[in-house]
Every structure is written in structure tokens, then in C-alpha cells.
Image (cartoon, rainbow, N blue to C red; front, side):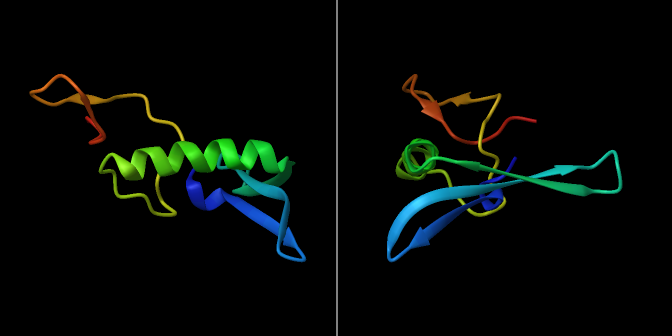
Length: 83
């Protein structure tokens, strides 16, 4: 799932939920929708902001979760995907 698949929903400038778009690529690219709470949206947004703060270029095409991290010379994690 990519960052662009989570869409915040505001009512009167207040975040009330976020819509999640899920695609089933095995069955005619059918889309399914679900919703998460404002707290869950903020947790995911905090994660994406953390990655951006540490040098990753975050766009709508960025994957929400990463499975591989590259270590730099100082031993800290770099956010360049391997492979």
C-alpha cells in the first residue's frame, strides 16, 4: 500500500477519519475501501514524517512499510531501498 492510498477526511477543518483504498490486482484491479480513525491516520502520518525528516523523499508513490534498510558508515539507518 502506498501513501497516496490513505486519504484524510475533514469536516469543518477537523480530521474525522481517513479513507484507505485497497486494490486487488489479481481480480481486475478491483478497489476496496475502508476507513481508519484520526488516531490511526496520525500514527501513519507521524511514521511518514519521521522518514522524511531522516532524508527519504516521501511522495504519494512511497510505500507505507519498508522491508529493507541500508546502513550508512556511521551505523545509523539510511532510507534508501535495497534491491
